[in-house]
Length: 188
Image (cartoon, rainbow, N blue to C red; front, top):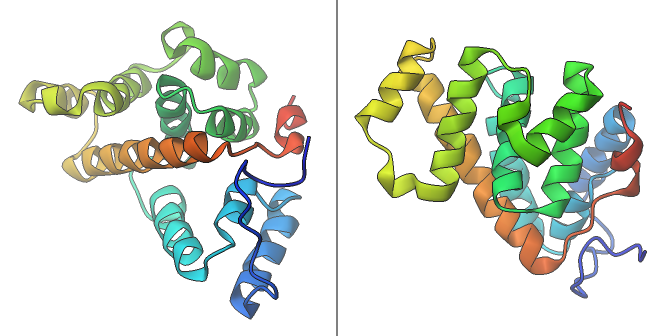
């Protein structure tokens, strides 16, 4: 497998801006790697910064959703969109955060067979509907989330995470983005 993060010939900025160098070093320190999605965006500083700002806000910022729940949404959306990169990368994150290697795989293959709390089932059903049929979402769908214990801010966050990954999946698939090989063995 090639060292290129995508099937496109878009070389990284050289040299990388100092802030990008620091961010990549932080990724290496915390994750043990620089995710290929970041390397893929590193041909354009503005695009990389926009992507990372949105990702960091949605996935790491304040929310009523746990980090695991946000990663679960990423996997279910990516599975619905058949995005190889995100299924592998976020499946690894689900395994690591949950301590359950089977959960990441169940979410990739068929989230309905996973052992989930009712709250998580409602959240994932909504995220899947956002992905596959967002125009069909109505007040009854939001009420189902409220009944499962989600507030309106949480509903916004579920929709925003699902929407972000729907966009990311399309870019990753269209560019032939390749998952870092390390993801395949993490948290197993």
